[in-house]
Amino acid sequence: MSVLAYEVSDGVAYLTIQSPPANALSSTLLQDLEEKLQKVEADESVKAIVLKGEGRFFSAGADIKEFTSFQNSSDSKNLAQKGQQLFNKIEHFPIPVIAAIHGAALGGGLELAMSCHIRIVTKTAKLGLPELTLGIIPGFAGTQRLPQHVGNAKAYEMILSGDPISGEEAYHFGLANKVVEDEELEKETTKLAEKIAQKSKPSIQYVMSLVPYAKTELFDRGLEAEAKAFKEVFNSHDAREGIQAFLEKRKPNFTDK
Image (cartoon, rainbow, N blue to C red; front, side, top):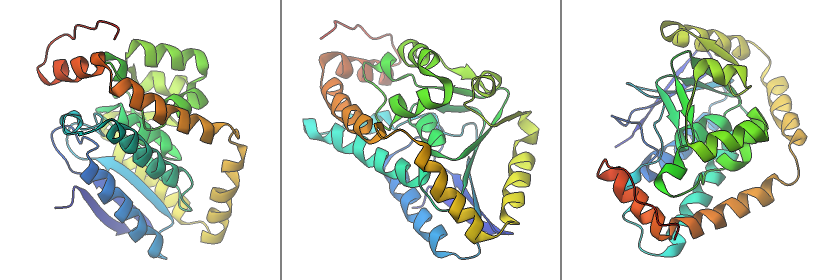
């Protein structure tokens, strides 16, 4: 069953996450997203993409329940690398992707949003990387992309505290291109996507291929280091405790082991 709706209108492909209640980034959703991107790429009429979430959230993060099904230590690293590869594909996609963020973009949800080229957020949206509250760390390039948007100091604060910021703060710190009222999100996102879709596709694709050259050459090394660290931290006692505490809706008892 598809958890990602697909629709094309006026040169814009709309991808809508439909996995209530949290629109969690399960392995099923990641696979569905990869397949939909292939479908978009094969459609010559598409010049822009809007990625959004149905219901209360854009995406509240990874599917924590899925973490408990891992059988060996390499499962966690494989998950991190799968997410990194998919989000890298989005960042280097030849068609611009606009994330329309409402409700919450947390953990993997924010990492997904950061891989998009443009982010429009509502004032009341919450954006953050709360992984340390579970005894783990961001694994889908969060430690590498967040500093590029908000700077090292703010990235340290957000990741180490686990506290989210509002949509207005996200705009202030450079994490969002535009902040709007909740009821204006769809209209403003569609307006921008349709404006892009009016441009020549070859021109769009050249821009999409050129801008990534500005990224530091250390980024790929950072991704590999993050995946390895995710594996090490994920297999710690505190990670098991943090994940179990989250599922049991209680405060974790970390022992620093």
